[in-house]
Length: 112
Image (cartoon, rainbow, N blue to C red):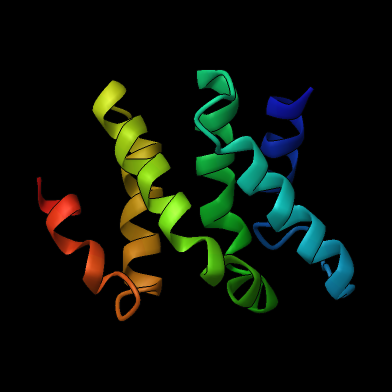
């Protein structure tokens, strides 16, 4: 169910759904982060990582995601080490371009 919920938000946050309630956007971001944790099953983490990039197209979501940037980057790096997937790499590239200034401290981890 968590995997499917992440998928739905990834699909509909991509311009199909106009989210205006900041409480709802905050809950979406918290749910995505919760599902990106290492203890979650791989399919759930993968879907949450792919959905996060699309949720970032909602301007308000960026402010909710910035505090968890460390957790988010670790999750992406672990997922990309586990398997190769175009959608995951594309999502990671977009997130790096969005948060380019905040990612500087993690540049060594990203390069390795």
